[in-house]
Image (cartoon, helix red, strand yellow):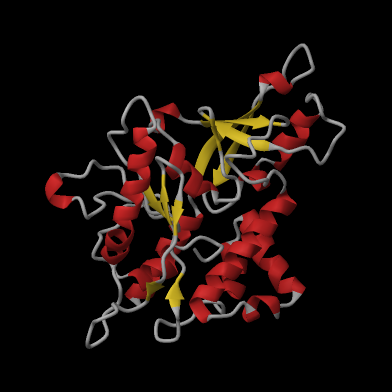
Length: 303
């Protein structure tokens, strides 16, 4: 009973995470003599930028160069970095935010032109955000069960309930549907885990088994297994990025999405390990078994 209460508190804490956010319109997109005032929002870590910023997008559009084109490519920027708005807000924040709590709110610029197509994919509306969310959930379900049938055969009302409860932050309504999508550890095929580098913003996704491959009796795979499996590839990618830069990157920040982020320099003795990481904004001991970690801290797309 105590364990169930603790799990409930953990999930409520994850769903109750908000980031103070300031949205402004890009000055080069404004046609008015006086730009519109910024809009301040508490952004849910579980949601998506096109969802929480829908009022800001519509408000600023009337002052933008291309305001008559409702299909213009809206995109978001923080610190001169285009944001991958197809990812959950919590993932983005852990990837790119370089300030401290005292620097809040997180200041995001909304653009209506000059879409950086070589850096991000289009996801500037609530409808597009849903398409990316549904696609990601299908990927997760395929890894878990080997099929997307459970989602494809779900009624439209159930699919809408998943999405709308995510948009409104209603975990209870979300869980009423989502709990039937998560298989037990014995029936799960693979775990939907992504590792994202906050340095290069590249994603690594491997086949992660529920149980350690050579364990007898069966032992649940741990977080350290994933860090060891993906660490060398992440460092190689970041080393390549660093070599192309005039100044080397001294620290690495990695995120395993759900969201695992590594931010520590690697010593010569420990180069095969990633020493810091975040999952949904939380640093978790590396020996933690993955399955319960995934079931408690996964995002709404089940990654």
